[in-house]
Amino acid sequence: MTEKSLAAGSLGGTSAHAQQRATRGLWSSRWVFFLAATGSAVGLGNIWKFPYITGQNGGGAFVLVYLACILLIGIPLLMAEVMIGRRGRQNPDGAVARLAREAGASTRWRVAGWLGGLTGFLILSFYLVVAGWALAYVPATFSGGFAGVSGEASGELFGALLASPLRLVVCATLVLAATMLIVGLGVRGGLERSLRFLMPGLFVLMLVLVVYAAIEGEFAQALQFLFVPDFSELTAKSVLIALGHAFFTLSLGCGAMMVYGSYLPEGTSIAKTSVLVALADTAVALLAGMAIFPLVFGNALEPGAGPGLIFVTLPIAFGQMPLGQVVGGLFFVMLVIAALTSAISLSEPSIAWLTERFGMSRLKAVLVSGGLLWLLSLGSVFSFNLWADYQLFGKTFFDTLDYLTTNWLMPLGGLGTVLFTGWVLKEATVREAIGLQRDGLFRAWWLLLRFGTPLGIVLVFLNLAGMI
Ligand code: PHE
Image (tube, rainbow, N blue to C red; front, side):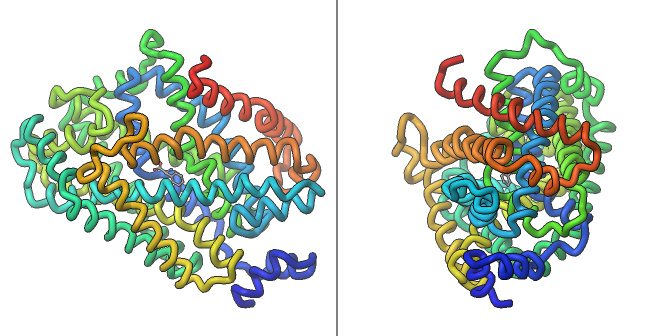
């Protein structure tokens, strides 16, 4: 079946539909799906963002709320997204439209899928730039560029990177090229083959770093900071930041998990796999915390330093510790790998959309979206230098994109998906598609999805609107 006829099948009757469901590329095993979904979830969100927001929000109590958000909102939504993808067997836009048609509802709900693809595309344009910073830090660290560096000097080195459009463009372009190369090879080739060694490699590197930090850093103090909750540190805003981060870190509300679900073979338990993905994602975030905070405390650095935490403060630690060059270099390699597996999933919804909706070849879709992404990423690059003074409501282009996607588009897409699943699809259809064997479990999930999850998301919006 050609891609053109796949696209035609999406518009055609049930036999074409059944044929398409049967012939579209699938993950070769449940293990590969698990790797891919974990690769999507684990990224800059876990290693760069989680530690710095935990540092800013007081540690243990924030971590506890974040874990509750993953459990009560993240996992139910993750299951719904994977289910829609698998049932719809298409890009998010087409999958939602198909399920809506099956339920006799308006295909306008496809906006929930379509918006997701767009959100993923926008996130990717600035995600590439941050991943580029990590890439720039690989040679800088391995070559000993941070040896004995002071806090001020480290800040200046990071500032010098941000001030150079050329370095930023080169690094972001390399990340983009690697992403598009892997995606271009297709789901069965590129994604699978790379994920098979990327994800286990990441875990091993992370463990090595934690062991190193445990030996060399202030491990006990870090554990106390991360796991002993002090509720006096918790504000209403921290609770909502934790909720928002649950979306970002599990790759929800932007089509990524839906499109990965669309390649999931029948018969795999969506619930079990989703729980495992969330566990793996949380484990990496906690490991990142356990690797970073012992170094932060051991070197009397500031846990609440903000987004610069790893790029400004860690090099100081790496510059001081014995073997810091190697440990630091490995750390940034790990960060690039983690970002790459997330970037792949961020690009896949729009690539699948271009091939399936417009019948483009995969190569052409990769070139078209790669080109657009590159142009858009220039906006983020120039936000730090040439265009730093052009601001909209006090935000640069980069900040605006980040703010718009993380705080508005992702929760909005997630809300659409939750409402669509819980209130538009027929309960019997969902029950069959999700494949939860035990009735009690299905009931619990269904209740959470219909009431708890939308309520949580609406709270985020109310907070942003300044109403609570
Ligand atoms: N979850 C990824 C991370 O933590 C980011 C991401 C968001 C990836 C949305 C895909 C979709 O870095």
